[in-house]
Structure formats: C-alpha cells, structure tokens
Image (cartoon, rainbow, N blue to C red; front, top):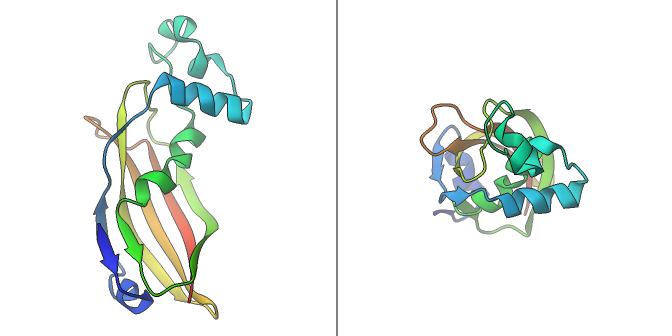
Length: 150
C-alpha cells in the first residue's frame, strides 16, 4: 500500500507506477450476479454448457464486470491523506484486449498518469491495467479520473 500524506505528495509521484493489488478469482457466481444486476444474460457469460462449444470453451466475464472490479482492486494500492473525499469523475479511455475466463485470477496495477489543479483540489488520471494471471495480454486497460477534494 502506497500512502500519500497529501495531494502535493501525490502530485510529486506523477508518472510513477504505484504498484499492484492482490489476485482475485473471477467465479461463475460473480459473473451470474453481475448478469442479474445488469440484465445481460448472454449465453457466453451464464450458460456453461453452451459456452463449452463456444469460441472460448467456457464462460467468460462481461467486459463491464472486469471494469467494475477496478475500484475494489485499486483501493489496495494507494490512498491519499489530507482530503475531504475522492469522487469518481469518469473514464477517458477503456479497452478490453483479452477476455477473462471463468476461474481466472485478475489484479490491477496503477500508473499515475496526470494530475491537474482544480479549484476543489486535484483531478487525477490513473491508468489501471487489469492483468490476468499467466496471460501476456491484460483484460482491461482503463484511464480513470478521480477528483480529490481538499
């Protein structure tokens, strides 16, 4: 865990890789719960029998499920002190270079890409690279924006 005392210390780390979180297994139960929450019950995600004959030989996680894991996986990597709050400000770019098969383990790494002064505090862009264990290609690369309010 990387602890930044305040926004000035965070700003000084611009351009650095801040570390990796722990591995998380993507289970069929998690995939099914995501399908229920979003209404996306496409067979490639939820029908294990049909998916055996599909293009990946098994069910796969939704791309948006992988993206939605970023807050949970990322909070293990760094925190900022001396702020009132951090607000999810959005995403600049998201790509899904590889699928996540059921049972695969994923983790995220974070690079501090940009820090911009704002009246309220700092707008920070971090690049999350969601890695798949034993895979050369990541599952997701997302530039996330967080507004840290003083």
